Image (cartoon, rainbow, N blue to C red; front, side, top):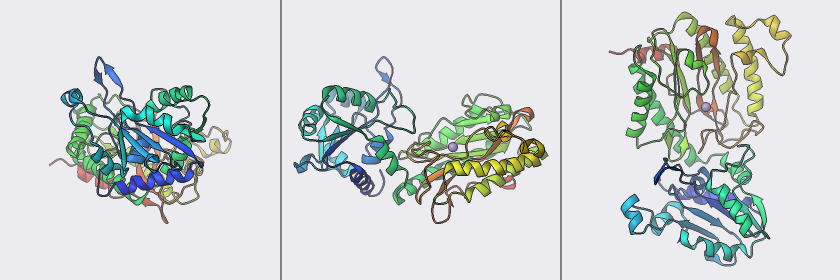
Length: 427
Ligand SMILES: [Mn+2]
Protein backbone atom coordinates (compact mmCIF):
# COMPACT_ATOMS: atom_id res chain seq x y z
CA UNK A 1 0.00 0.00 0.00
CA UNK A 2 2.80 2.39 0.91
CA UNK A 3 6.31 2.06 2.28
CA UNK A 4 6.39 -0.26 5.27
CA UNK A 5 2.64 0.05 5.71
CA UNK A 6 2.41 -3.25 7.56
CA UNK A 7 4.01 -1.67 10.63
CA UNK A 8 0.89 0.53 10.84
CA UNK A 9 -1.51 -2.42 10.72
CA UNK A 10 0.56 -4.36 13.28
CA UNK A 11 0.39 -1.32 15.58
CA UNK A 12 -3.34 -0.93 15.02
CA UNK A 13 -4.04 -4.57 15.89
CA UNK A 14 -1.88 -4.29 19.01
CA UNK A 15 -3.96 -1.28 20.12
CA UNK A 16 -7.18 -3.21 19.66
CA UNK A 17 -5.85 -6.27 21.48
CA UNK A 18 -4.94 -4.12 24.47
CA UNK A 19 -8.60 -3.16 24.84
CA UNK A 20 -9.97 -6.71 24.56
CA UNK A 21 -10.94 -8.70 27.66
CA UNK A 22 -8.71 -11.63 28.65
CA UNK A 23 -9.35 -14.86 26.77
CA UNK A 24 -11.54 -13.27 24.12
CA UNK A 25 -11.83 -13.61 20.36
CA UNK A 26 -12.54 -10.82 17.87
CA UNK A 27 -13.87 -11.40 14.37
CA UNK A 28 -13.70 -8.65 11.75
CA UNK A 29 -15.37 -8.97 8.34
CA UNK A 30 -14.73 -7.26 5.03
CA UNK A 31 -17.54 -5.32 3.32
CA UNK A 32 -20.20 -7.14 1.44
CA UNK A 33 -20.05 -7.08 -2.33
CA UNK A 34 -23.32 -5.46 -3.33
CA UNK A 35 -25.07 -7.12 -6.25
CA UNK A 36 -26.35 -4.44 -8.61
CA UNK A 37 -28.04 -6.63 -11.17
CA UNK A 38 -27.74 -10.16 -12.54
CA UNK A 39 -24.11 -11.15 -11.90
CA UNK A 40 -22.85 -7.55 -11.88
CA UNK A 41 -21.73 -5.83 -8.70
CA UNK A 42 -21.61 -2.22 -7.54
CA UNK A 43 -18.21 -0.66 -7.03
CA UNK A 44 -16.52 -2.30 -4.07
CA UNK A 45 -15.37 -0.35 -1.03
CA UNK A 46 -13.57 -2.27 1.70
CA UNK A 47 -14.86 -1.79 5.24
CA UNK A 48 -12.87 0.87 7.05
CA UNK A 49 -12.19 -1.42 10.01
CA UNK A 50 -10.67 -4.06 7.72
CA UNK A 51 -8.42 -1.46 6.06
CA UNK A 52 -7.44 -0.18 9.50
CA UNK A 53 -6.46 -3.57 10.87
CA UNK A 54 -5.03 -5.31 7.79
CA UNK A 55 -4.62 -3.01 4.77
CA UNK A 56 -6.40 -5.65 2.68
CA UNK A 57 -8.83 -4.14 0.15
CA UNK A 58 -10.05 -7.48 -1.23
CA UNK A 59 -13.57 -8.87 -0.70
CA UNK A 60 -14.32 -12.01 1.33
CA UNK A 61 -11.60 -11.32 3.88
CA UNK A 62 -12.00 -12.19 7.57
CA UNK A 63 -9.68 -11.38 10.44
CA UNK A 64 -9.59 -13.51 13.59
CA UNK A 65 -7.83 -12.26 16.71
CA UNK A 66 -7.43 -14.50 19.75
CA UNK A 67 -4.43 -13.06 21.59
CA UNK A 68 -4.59 -15.51 24.52
CA UNK A 69 -4.94 -18.65 22.47
CA UNK A 70 -2.65 -21.41 23.76
CA UNK A 71 -2.02 -22.33 20.14
CA UNK A 72 0.40 -19.69 18.91
CA UNK A 73 -0.55 -20.23 15.27
CA UNK A 74 -4.17 -19.30 15.88
CA UNK A 75 -3.66 -16.03 17.75
CA UNK A 76 -3.93 -14.02 14.59
CA UNK A 77 -5.35 -15.48 11.39
CA UNK A 78 -6.36 -13.77 8.16
CA UNK A 79 -8.74 -15.63 5.87
CA UNK A 80 -8.66 -14.61 2.23
CA UNK A 81 -10.48 -15.61 -0.91
CA UNK A 82 -9.05 -18.50 -2.91
CA UNK A 83 -8.97 -17.80 -6.64
CA UNK A 84 -9.80 -20.94 -8.62
CA UNK A 85 -9.52 -21.13 -12.41
CA UNK A 86 -13.01 -19.73 -12.91
CA UNK A 87 -12.35 -16.74 -10.63
CA UNK A 88 -9.09 -16.04 -12.42
CA UNK A 89 -10.90 -16.09 -15.76
CA UNK A 90 -13.74 -13.79 -14.71
CA UNK A 91 -12.13 -11.52 -12.13
CA UNK A 92 -8.38 -11.88 -12.49
CA UNK A 93 -5.71 -11.96 -9.83
CA UNK A 94 -6.51 -12.32 -6.13
CA UNK A 95 -3.97 -12.02 -3.32
CA UNK A 96 -1.72 -15.00 -2.73
CA UNK A 97 -1.10 -15.95 0.89
CA UNK A 98 2.36 -14.44 0.63
CA UNK A 99 1.03 -11.12 -0.68
CA UNK A 100 -1.65 -10.92 2.02
CA UNK A 101 1.00 -11.61 4.65
CA UNK A 102 3.33 -8.94 3.30
CA UNK A 103 0.59 -6.31 3.25
CA UNK A 104 -0.91 -7.05 6.64
CA UNK A 105 2.07 -8.32 8.63
CA UNK A 106 0.02 -11.38 9.62
CA UNK A 107 1.95 -14.68 9.44
CA UNK A 108 -0.91 -17.10 9.36
CA UNK A 109 -2.98 -16.67 6.19
CA UNK A 110 -5.66 -19.25 5.39
CA UNK A 111 -8.27 -19.66 2.64
CA UNK A 112 -11.78 -18.53 3.52
CA UNK A 113 -13.02 -22.11 3.02
CA UNK A 114 -11.26 -22.94 6.31
CA UNK A 115 -13.04 -20.21 8.25
CA UNK A 116 -15.90 -22.31 9.66
CA UNK A 117 -13.70 -25.13 10.90
CA UNK A 118 -11.19 -22.81 12.53
CA UNK A 119 -13.92 -20.69 14.11
CA UNK A 120 -15.55 -23.74 15.70
CA UNK A 121 -12.20 -24.80 17.03
CA UNK A 122 -11.13 -21.51 18.62
CA UNK A 123 -14.45 -20.11 19.78
CA UNK A 124 -14.99 -23.18 21.98
CA UNK A 125 -12.35 -22.09 24.49
CA UNK A 126 -12.93 -18.34 24.48
CA UNK A 127 -14.79 -16.59 27.31
CA UNK A 128 -16.05 -13.76 25.09
CA UNK A 129 -16.53 -13.19 21.39
CA UNK A 130 -16.30 -9.65 20.02
CA UNK A 131 -18.51 -9.10 16.98
CA UNK A 132 -18.54 -5.98 14.84
CA UNK A 133 -21.64 -4.46 16.34
CA UNK A 134 -22.55 -1.49 18.50
CA UNK A 135 -21.65 1.53 16.42
CA UNK A 136 -23.21 4.01 18.82
CA UNK A 137 -22.20 6.96 16.65
CA UNK A 138 -23.61 5.63 13.41
CA UNK A 139 -26.85 5.23 15.45
CA UNK A 140 -27.72 1.95 13.70
CA UNK A 141 -25.84 -1.21 12.90
CA UNK A 142 -26.01 -1.25 9.14
CA UNK A 143 -28.07 -4.33 8.17
CA UNK A 144 -26.66 -4.36 4.62
CA UNK A 145 -23.13 -5.09 5.82
CA UNK A 146 -21.47 -8.46 5.97
CA UNK A 147 -20.47 -7.91 9.60
CA UNK A 148 -24.14 -7.47 10.53
CA UNK A 149 -25.31 -10.68 8.86
CA UNK A 150 -22.21 -12.48 10.10
CA UNK A 151 -22.89 -11.41 13.68
CA UNK A 152 -26.49 -12.58 13.47
CA UNK A 153 -25.57 -15.94 12.01
CA UNK A 154 -22.76 -16.35 14.47
CA UNK A 155 -24.99 -15.71 17.47
CA UNK A 156 -27.39 -18.38 16.24
CA UNK A 157 -24.60 -20.90 15.69
CA UNK A 158 -23.04 -20.30 19.12
CA UNK A 159 -26.02 -19.41 21.36
CA UNK A 160 -24.16 -20.36 24.53
CA UNK A 161 -21.35 -17.86 23.95
CA UNK A 162 -21.04 -14.45 25.57
CA UNK A 163 -20.83 -11.64 23.03
CA UNK A 164 -19.34 -8.20 23.22
CA UNK A 165 -19.53 -5.18 20.94
CA UNK A 166 -16.32 -4.64 19.01
CA UNK A 167 -17.11 -1.39 17.23
CA UNK A 168 -16.84 0.90 20.30
CA UNK A 169 -13.29 -0.39 20.89
CA UNK A 170 -12.22 0.19 17.28
CA UNK A 171 -13.89 3.60 17.19
CA UNK A 172 -11.91 4.63 20.23
CA UNK A 173 -8.54 3.83 18.65
CA UNK A 174 -9.35 4.99 15.12
CA UNK A 175 -9.98 8.55 16.32
CA UNK A 176 -6.33 9.25 17.10
CA UNK A 177 -4.19 9.03 13.97
CA UNK A 178 -0.65 7.69 13.76
CA UNK A 179 1.95 9.72 11.86
CA UNK A 180 1.69 7.28 8.96
CA UNK A 181 -2.06 7.88 8.77
CA UNK A 182 -1.55 11.67 8.76
CA UNK A 183 0.87 11.22 5.87
CA UNK A 184 -1.75 9.34 3.84
CA UNK A 185 -4.38 11.99 4.61
CA UNK A 186 -1.88 14.60 3.37
CA UNK A 187 -1.52 12.63 0.13
CA UNK A 188 -5.31 12.60 -0.30
CA UNK A 189 -5.35 16.36 0.37
CA UNK A 190 -2.60 16.82 -2.19
CA UNK A 191 -4.75 15.26 -4.92
CA UNK A 192 -7.72 17.39 -3.85
CA UNK A 193 -5.53 20.51 -3.93
CA UNK A 194 -4.14 19.79 -7.40
CA UNK A 195 -7.65 19.12 -8.64
CA UNK A 196 -9.05 22.36 -7.26
CA UNK A 197 -6.31 24.43 -8.92
CA UNK A 198 -6.85 22.59 -12.19
CA UNK A 199 -10.59 23.23 -12.36
CA UNK A 200 -10.55 26.88 -11.22
CA UNK A 201 -9.64 28.42 -14.63
CA UNK A 202 -12.23 26.20 -16.33
CA UNK A 203 -15.17 27.62 -14.40
CA UNK A 204 -17.15 30.12 -16.50
CA UNK A 205 -20.75 31.03 -17.39
CA UNK A 206 -22.48 28.72 -19.86
CA UNK A 207 -20.85 25.44 -18.89
CA UNK A 208 -22.60 22.94 -16.63
CA UNK A 209 -22.10 21.71 -13.08
CA UNK A 210 -21.51 18.24 -14.50
CA UNK A 211 -18.69 19.63 -16.67
CA UNK A 212 -16.92 20.55 -13.46
CA UNK A 213 -17.81 17.25 -11.79
CA UNK A 214 -16.30 15.47 -14.81
CA UNK A 215 -13.09 17.49 -14.44
CA UNK A 216 -12.84 16.58 -10.76
CA UNK A 217 -13.40 12.88 -11.44
CA UNK A 218 -10.96 12.91 -14.35
CA UNK A 219 -8.29 14.46 -12.17
CA UNK A 220 -8.86 11.86 -9.42
CA UNK A 221 -8.64 9.02 -11.93
CA UNK A 222 -5.44 10.40 -13.39
CA UNK A 223 -3.99 10.64 -9.88
CA UNK A 224 -3.64 6.97 -9.09
CA UNK A 225 -7.36 6.38 -9.59
CA UNK A 226 -8.36 7.94 -6.29
CA UNK A 227 -12.05 7.45 -5.56
CA UNK A 228 -14.20 10.28 -4.22
CA UNK A 229 -14.38 10.27 -0.41
CA UNK A 230 -18.09 11.07 -0.85
CA UNK A 231 -20.40 12.23 -3.64
CA UNK A 232 -19.04 15.57 -4.84
CA UNK A 233 -21.16 18.72 -4.53
CA UNK A 234 -20.96 21.11 -7.49
CA UNK A 235 -23.70 23.62 -6.73
CA UNK A 236 -24.24 26.86 -8.61
CA UNK A 237 -26.57 29.74 -7.75
CA UNK A 238 -29.50 28.81 -5.52
CA UNK A 239 -28.29 25.16 -5.48
CA UNK A 240 -25.47 26.29 -3.21
CA UNK A 241 -28.04 26.74 -0.44
CA UNK A 242 -28.86 23.00 -0.55
CA UNK A 243 -26.44 21.46 1.93
CA UNK A 244 -26.04 18.02 0.37
CA UNK A 245 -26.82 18.91 -3.26
CA UNK A 246 -25.62 16.08 -5.49
CA UNK A 247 -27.50 16.26 -8.77
CA UNK A 248 -24.84 18.55 -10.33
CA UNK A 249 -26.55 19.17 -13.68
CA UNK A 250 -27.44 22.87 -13.89
CA UNK A 251 -25.98 25.52 -16.15
CA UNK A 252 -23.57 28.02 -14.59
CA UNK A 253 -24.96 31.54 -14.74
CA UNK A 254 -22.99 34.78 -14.92
CA UNK A 255 -22.80 36.56 -11.58
CA UNK A 256 -23.68 33.47 -9.52
CA UNK A 257 -21.46 31.61 -7.11
CA UNK A 258 -20.33 28.00 -7.42
CA UNK A 259 -20.01 25.97 -4.23
CA UNK A 260 -17.64 23.02 -4.49
CA UNK A 261 -17.43 20.34 -1.79
CA UNK A 262 -15.32 17.34 -2.76
CA UNK A 263 -12.35 15.27 -1.68
CA UNK A 264 -10.10 12.53 -2.96
CA UNK A 265 -9.67 9.28 -1.05
CA UNK A 266 -6.16 7.83 -0.89
CA UNK A 267 -5.40 4.33 0.40
CA UNK A 268 -8.77 4.39 2.12
CA UNK A 269 -8.28 7.78 3.81
CA UNK A 270 -10.54 10.75 3.11
CA UNK A 271 -9.97 14.41 2.43
CA UNK A 272 -12.80 16.93 2.56
CA UNK A 273 -12.61 20.38 0.97
CA UNK A 274 -15.17 23.14 0.37
CA UNK A 275 -14.63 26.32 -1.61
CA UNK A 276 -17.07 28.82 -3.07
CA UNK A 277 -16.00 30.74 -6.16
CA UNK A 278 -17.53 33.40 -8.46
CA UNK A 279 -18.63 31.93 -11.82
CA UNK A 280 -17.72 35.14 -13.67
CA UNK A 281 -14.30 35.23 -12.04
CA UNK A 282 -15.03 38.15 -9.74
CA UNK A 283 -17.08 38.34 -6.53
CA UNK A 284 -19.86 40.93 -6.41
CA UNK A 285 -19.81 43.39 -3.54
CA UNK A 286 -22.45 41.49 -1.57
CA UNK A 287 -20.89 38.07 -2.24
CA UNK A 288 -17.54 39.45 -1.07
CA UNK A 289 -19.10 40.77 2.16
CA UNK A 290 -20.57 37.39 3.01
CA UNK A 291 -17.40 35.58 1.93
CA UNK A 292 -15.33 37.76 4.25
CA UNK A 293 -17.62 36.87 7.14
CA UNK A 294 -17.37 33.12 6.50
CA UNK A 295 -13.59 33.33 6.10
CA UNK A 296 -13.24 35.36 9.28
CA UNK A 297 -15.26 32.80 11.22
CA UNK A 298 -13.17 30.00 9.75
CA UNK A 299 -9.91 31.67 10.78
CA UNK A 300 -11.20 32.16 14.32
CA UNK A 301 -12.70 28.69 14.55
CA UNK A 302 -9.48 27.02 13.40
CA UNK A 303 -7.80 28.22 16.59
CA UNK A 304 -10.26 26.17 18.65
CA UNK A 305 -8.98 22.77 17.50
CA UNK A 306 -6.96 22.28 20.66
CA UNK A 307 -6.74 19.36 23.08
CA UNK A 308 -9.65 19.15 25.50
CA UNK A 309 -12.10 21.01 23.28
CA UNK A 310 -15.15 19.24 21.79
CA UNK A 311 -17.31 19.66 18.69
CA UNK A 312 -20.16 20.78 20.95
CA UNK A 313 -18.08 23.57 22.48
CA UNK A 314 -16.79 24.50 19.04
CA UNK A 315 -20.32 24.77 17.67
CA UNK A 316 -21.31 26.97 20.56
CA UNK A 317 -18.37 29.34 20.00
CA UNK A 318 -19.01 29.47 16.24
CA UNK A 319 -22.67 30.23 16.97
CA UNK A 320 -21.64 33.46 18.72
CA UNK A 321 -19.26 34.40 15.91
CA UNK A 322 -22.04 33.73 13.45
CA UNK A 323 -24.45 36.02 15.30
CA UNK A 324 -21.93 38.89 15.13
CA UNK A 325 -21.38 38.43 11.42
CA UNK A 326 -25.05 37.99 10.55
CA UNK A 327 -25.84 41.26 12.33
CA UNK A 328 -23.08 43.00 10.35
CA UNK A 329 -24.51 41.55 7.15
CA UNK A 330 -27.96 42.93 8.04
CA UNK A 331 -29.46 39.47 8.15
CA UNK A 332 -30.24 39.48 11.87
CA UNK A 333 -31.00 42.23 14.37
CA UNK A 334 -29.18 42.40 17.68
CA UNK A 335 -32.44 43.21 19.43
CA UNK A 336 -34.00 40.01 18.08
CA UNK A 337 -30.97 37.93 19.11
CA UNK A 338 -31.28 39.25 22.66
CA UNK A 339 -34.77 37.83 23.01
CA UNK A 340 -34.29 34.65 20.97
CA UNK A 341 -35.12 31.14 22.19
CA UNK A 342 -31.71 29.79 23.21
CA UNK A 343 -32.65 26.28 22.08
CA UNK A 344 -33.39 27.56 18.58
CA UNK A 345 -31.00 30.44 17.94
CA UNK A 346 -31.88 32.70 15.03
CA UNK A 347 -28.55 32.18 13.25
CA UNK A 348 -29.71 28.66 12.36
CA UNK A 349 -31.81 30.19 9.59
CA UNK A 350 -28.55 30.97 7.77
CA UNK A 351 -26.22 28.36 9.27
CA UNK A 352 -28.02 25.08 9.80
CA UNK A 353 -25.21 22.55 10.11
CA UNK A 354 -22.39 21.88 12.55
CA UNK A 355 -18.89 23.26 12.12
CA UNK A 356 -16.97 20.03 12.33
CA UNK A 357 -16.78 16.26 12.01
CA UNK A 358 -13.97 13.78 12.46
CA UNK A 359 -12.09 12.68 9.34
CA UNK A 360 -10.18 9.45 8.71
CA UNK A 361 -10.96 6.25 6.86
CA UNK A 362 -14.51 7.55 6.67
CA UNK A 363 -15.15 11.14 5.68
CA UNK A 364 -17.53 11.31 8.62
CA UNK A 365 -15.24 9.27 10.82
CA UNK A 366 -15.83 7.80 14.26
CA UNK A 367 -16.14 10.27 17.10
CA UNK A 368 -19.12 12.23 18.40
CA UNK A 369 -19.72 15.78 19.55
CA UNK A 370 -18.69 15.13 23.17
CA UNK A 371 -15.33 13.53 22.42
CA UNK A 372 -12.49 15.64 23.79
CA UNK A 373 -9.94 16.54 21.14
CA UNK A 374 -6.58 14.83 21.45
CA UNK A 375 -3.35 15.28 19.54
CA UNK A 376 -3.54 13.28 16.33
CA UNK A 377 -7.25 13.75 15.67
CA UNK A 378 -8.26 15.17 12.30
CA UNK A 379 -11.45 17.18 11.91
CA UNK A 380 -13.10 19.42 9.37
CA UNK A 381 -13.64 23.13 9.98
CA UNK A 382 -16.54 24.19 7.79
CA UNK A 383 -18.54 27.31 8.54
CA UNK A 384 -21.06 28.54 5.99
CA UNK A 385 -23.74 31.16 5.42
CA UNK A 386 -26.71 30.25 3.23
CA UNK A 387 -29.07 33.05 2.16
CA UNK A 388 -31.95 31.59 0.17
CA UNK A 389 -33.60 34.98 -0.38
CA UNK A 390 -30.41 36.27 -2.02
CA UNK A 391 -29.90 33.10 -4.03
CA UNK A 392 -26.55 31.93 -2.75
CA UNK A 393 -24.69 30.05 -0.04
CA UNK A 394 -21.02 30.15 0.89
CA UNK A 395 -19.16 27.32 2.62
CA UNK A 396 -15.45 27.09 3.25
CA UNK A 397 -13.89 23.95 4.63
CA UNK A 398 -10.39 22.82 5.55
CA UNK A 399 -9.15 19.71 7.36
CA UNK A 400 -7.43 20.42 10.68
CA UNK A 401 -5.02 18.28 12.69
CA UNK A 402 -5.11 18.65 16.47
CA UNK A 403 -1.55 19.11 17.74
CA UNK A 404 0.24 21.36 20.26
CA UNK A 405 -1.20 24.10 18.06
CA UNK A 406 -3.91 23.31 15.50
CA UNK A 407 -2.39 22.46 12.11
CA UNK A 408 -4.37 23.38 9.02
CA UNK A 409 -3.63 20.52 6.63
CA UNK A 410 -5.21 22.54 3.79
CA UNK A 411 -3.44 25.82 4.45
CA UNK A 412 -1.80 25.67 1.01
CA UNK A 413 -5.11 25.46 -0.87
CA UNK A 414 -6.17 28.92 -2.16
CA UNK A 415 -8.93 30.53 -0.13
CA UNK A 416 -8.34 34.33 -0.18
CA UNK A 417 -10.72 36.05 -2.62
CA UNK A 418 -7.96 37.85 -4.53
CA UNK A 419 -6.05 34.58 -4.98
CA UNK A 420 -9.16 32.77 -6.22
CA UNK A 421 -9.94 35.58 -8.68
CA UNK A 422 -6.36 35.54 -9.95
CA UNK A 423 -6.38 31.75 -10.50
CA UNK A 424 -9.70 31.94 -12.32
CA UNK A 425 -8.39 34.27 -15.02
CA UNK A 426 -8.49 32.15 -18.15
CA UNK A 427 -5.73 33.26 -20.49
MN1 LIG B 1 -17.17 18.06 5.61
